[in-house]
Image (cartoon, rainbow, N blue to C red):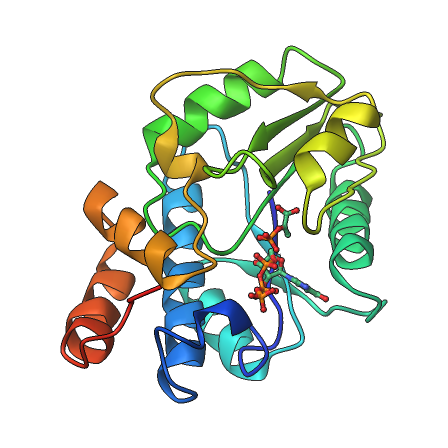
Amino acid sequence: MVVPLKPLALAKSRLAAAAGPLVRPRLALAFAQDTVAAALACPAVRDVSVVTDDPVAALTLGAVGARIVPDAPARGLNAALAHGARAVRARRPGAPVATLNADLPALRPAELSRVLAAAAEFPRAFLPDAAGIGTTLLSAAPGVELRPAFGGASRRRHLLSGAVEIRLDGVRSVRQDVDTGEDLRAAVELGVGPRTAERWAVDVRAAGGAGG
Ligand SMILES: Nc1nc2c(ncn2[C@@H]2O[C@H](COP(=O)(O)OP(=O)(O)OP(=O)(O)O)[C@@H](O)[C@H]2O)c(=O)[nH]1
Ligand SMILES: C=C(OP(=O)(O)O)C(=O)O
């Protein structure tokens, strides 16, 4: 599993209205910690490689159990994902590979298992985000190139690229990415992992944030 993560100071810029410049990087890291921990708790996931150049995130997520892959291409999200997928395949040439966004703090291992089992039926497959515009997971079967096309309206782009859209009920936790304060509220309602729950209680709710 490949999880991309921007430098924390730049991450989650659309949360600016809900969280100030000190809280936002902490939230971005908490989302990533909860996402990586839930992915590692999923029996279908062999390992998690986080593609990041952020030294604090690298230390913290390494401690959670992730492998850290430097964002060597430094050419944005899709280049980082293709690089991460190559790193996975360099170690295990016959492996399937999937990418998962780092902003899924409500992620539940059992739901991720169901999505990965559905994805394994196809050469390439993807899961649309909760808004139905973007993508939270893209997979490629053994021997198949990932060809990530993330960013903005990536659901349509992944569909046009020939990837199969996964249609499953009851996998909201894999779809609920957090871009805005409203998304954060929705994730908290679903039930977030412990690091995000703590940041929410201490940094956001206490400050009256996450308005939108
Ligand atoms: N390694 C790496 N990860 C990236 C890059 N750009 C985005 N990501 C990650 O890709 C995932 C999806 O990106 P977004 O949802 O747009 O997150 P974001 O860029 O932090 O959010 P905004 O600043 O609001 O656009 C998140 O886990 C990001 O941290 C990049 O250039 N390199
Ligand atoms: C990165 C993506 O979108 P967003 O920036 O809206 O999370 C995407 O869903 O492809």
